[in-house]
Length: 570
Image (cartoon, rainbow, N blue to C red; front, side, top):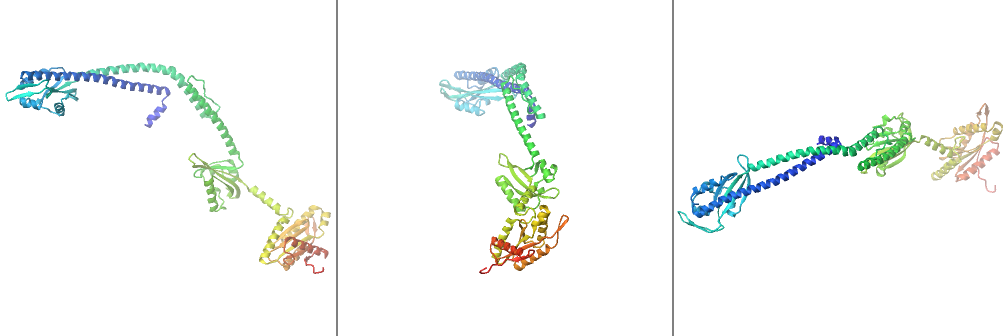
């Protein structure tokens, strides 16, 4: 079946048309021949039936004459009648079949006069003539007819035994005739031969006519335009040149319409190819990495940015699962939530940490979407991601600028105020003390005026480093602005703790600072306030420490003072 289908597809239009027309003619010939032969066969059968019935009726008429003359009782007379009638043309068998009443009246007859089959018995019982086609022992076809022997009038006769009466209309027997149809079969065969000869001659004539018609009309109007259209298709397929167009100026309007539709399709393909090329360029030149997987999450396409970000070349991506980038920072619950979002909504996006080929872990912003077919089944996943290391660094830098001093990198006033607030709340809750130190450099303006602002900035940076060495990691140092600093001592720090830190700072500042080629010694005046002894809110804590700092300056600088509430009447 496949071989036939492939062969039919490979056959050209002209050959297919020949086959269809010739096949149609052959079918029409067989139908016509069957109809003609059927008509002849019906006529021949009717003629044979008439001849057989006439022979049977002749036999019956002879038997009527024997009955009227009283000679029917003698079997020899009946035999002579049979012999005479058997000489009729085409008679293969002739029998007399006597009815029971006749047997009783005339005595036993010849053996062949008895009813031998159902056909005989049916005719004797019904009085109807029956016909049947059969085949003789020599293979010839034949026609058998059994005609009832019906008395036409009342008849009275005698034999040697008794009187008998035959009533008009009674069935006294039957005549069975078998006609050999060999001549008729020969006649049909001759007719069939002539029909075949006529068919062959007609086929040859029609083949010549159809060939000329096909060559003149079909080839010019169908085959050649179709071949030109096929040639154009092959050229477009070979070099993907969608600027080519098929010729629509052909004689056959159907093929012209086909060519116009083909050109419309090519135009759409041209536009689609232009868009595809644009998408390819966007895919290849995108600064964001893109990879596409199949439904089984095997990577089937990546763009160059994937290599730039991850360090994996294309051949190491294709066929692999994207989990080759897994950094291990996200737990199983993270990925379960991610895939739930993808399966439920068709999209997920968020920040994730992945690993480059060299082992470096980096942050990326990842978006994953799905592509579905007409049955709403996922056939592809598309992932788009970018390295956000620089963005994270910028965010951290912005965060640092928002909360830290740009010169000394110490917490600024906003961050210090937030930490002071939390420390006071914790102290109140835990019933512990919190200490605040307010520091101001002594005669810092002189350094700026004599050495310049650049030297002053370097001195502030050196001072900040000295201060860091004098406190705990849990403590907070803040540059309040200019040459002022504050230090927060949380977690139950009392006056004694604050004094220890103040003395440590004063001692650390005795060592000269190396500013360029010069050594500079500078001191601090320090004021201390304690919560809840001196104040319970941030503003009062800072104000009391500031007041104490000015008390230290007034008492000669390079020392510290603890805020003391003024007594009554002060």
